Length: 232
Image (cartoon, rainbow, N blue to C red; front, side, top):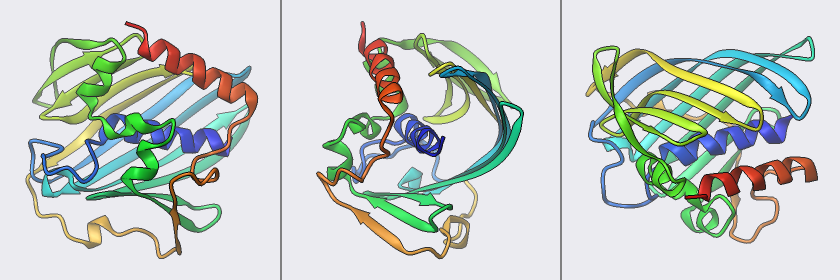
């Protein structure tokens, strides 16, 4: 299950990040702190799962520096588990925290762009278009007028490039994320964006350990999922 949790982090990055190191603004808002309620349920590889939790994003410099945290409570086959996930974008680098190993993995754009996860370098609208999706409407979330972008698997509510709500169905799970509190254009300190005091491991291009190792069944499901995404 650990590998799938990491894949979940990468999916979040895939939908949230613009081209790393680019001079263009990721968002049309200078800074923000947004707290979300999250939940998912479904049958993944024959295992019934249900999760609930909270997440938060904090960013400044129009999204060039962003910290994303999530804590979840899961019930899998009647057993309860708690997880914590933290990722950070700092200009041209991405950091993923592994709380079990107490280490932080650092990725640069080259390592990401030469992997099967190269679409992480696209922003939300570009990603939806590459999956054959499009803008389908508009709707208000907590008083903010959002554009709705969707494919068969993903539906996003975006305000000035910022995801305020999402419904994603993949690998047998339906996951929802919705903003509960929103603070825009407020002061954000370095302390707000601080990572845990763990050692950092720099992941190099071509390093086979730089991305999570999946079982053959998980890899087959991912390949089918990506095939569906790219169908026009």
